[in-house]
Image (tube, rainbow, N blue to C red):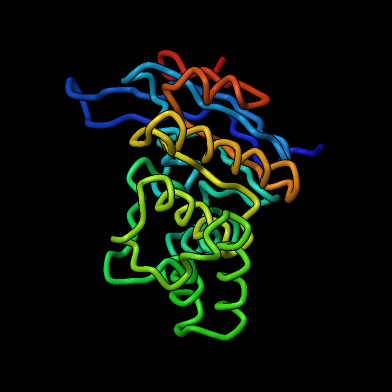
Length: 224
């Protein structure tokens, strides 16, 4: 494996003067291509801030963030948006599906936004992904008619729509019952093994963490 991303001496502070709070304190992290890693840490450890920076949704105060040969801390907002659309996928604790859209329409939404319209190729890709996540029989169902586990599988399919190298998952099973959580994690493992998509999963669930091949612990703004 080769490095997908590398972070060095990452610092993030909020506020100024006496109100300044340093959340990340010179964090270092390397993530290899094809890894399935859990991101662990108590509330206030800097885990969420790190995930937000990795997703190019926020810039650090200082340090470097290299991914796919690009130094992202020096990129403009427009460049970050383009990079995020091409190379990153996101799965959240709350699926954030559009309620008036079908499962297929939700999955192809990132590509429709990127290209300015729906295309036949995008619809074919969306159908293929829904088949792969076991929802081929729910393609034309409104998201409001799906169960919690089904909605999260739609969210995973949506995250994969643009073939990202890295999927960032923030508590993706946090709102699911144990059976649904295990099904979602089995799906993530299958995609990781078959497609070599890299996953970084933020979780407080020990069983989810144990299912990952690597565990990264964030404590006091540093990675262990």
